[in-house]
Length: 350
Image (tube, rainbow, N blue to C red; front, top):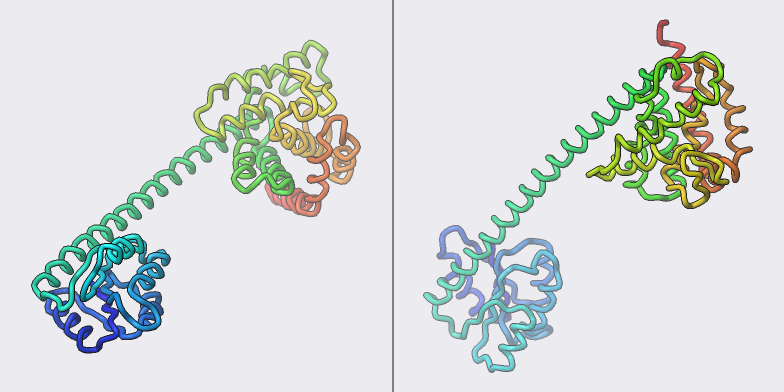
């Protein structure tokens, strides 16, 4: 361990350093100028500092205050050395950060004992900090594993729902990406954008409760069939209710509200404006846009430019104008996403 001795008396500093160097496993450095000593302490981490009280330029108390203001020295033990130390000086030194005191001339046995004791405490601090960092790293790794498992389950479940709906998992992947773009453009924050990205794929999870006859019907649904189809939002909300994680909680809100409309004409609750969670408003745009661009049993795929115009035309009625504005701002990136999806689909053998 390293000890810094700050004393403007060369002989005194050398005597103290020599005594410290006799202790196995410990080495010392000497600084006669307190200002140089402060610079040296910032350049190198010392485990113990001994500082004389009376020195030119800076006295020992000013040195203590300065060192305690440096993050690496907040917990480092420090000994004030002085020929005489009054109660007032001792009180001021303690307030400045002194851990212990020694009188000049030093009793070398006492000096070595105090140095050993304080460095033992310093070693315990270091060991404790190392253990805390290790535990923190282990917790972060465990948390990352849990998050990865949660994400994997979400994506597998979302893709299963898409296959149940007669399509592939590509739809939910694109919806998730577009949702993240819109959330970022709205400046909701990186964590919120990530949660929306992960929650969006479960927006239609309630379709597992809808019959194949309705899901796979090639033509338009009858009013009775449409009423049954609309129940998928209720099923989805029930499946994701009482969530213990933020991602699933947001997914439940999305499943329940992604068919609500800004003007209040949507379903199931006829919510309007800000009554609709922002996550639901974002997914509404991404879901409708990608659905328009996708081939379904009841319709051909629309060109992306036509789908874009449709989204813009429904701003203020179906969709939140702020979300539509964010969608428009992301258009070049969305085009790249859709073009890449089209190229991938063309390269996939039938």
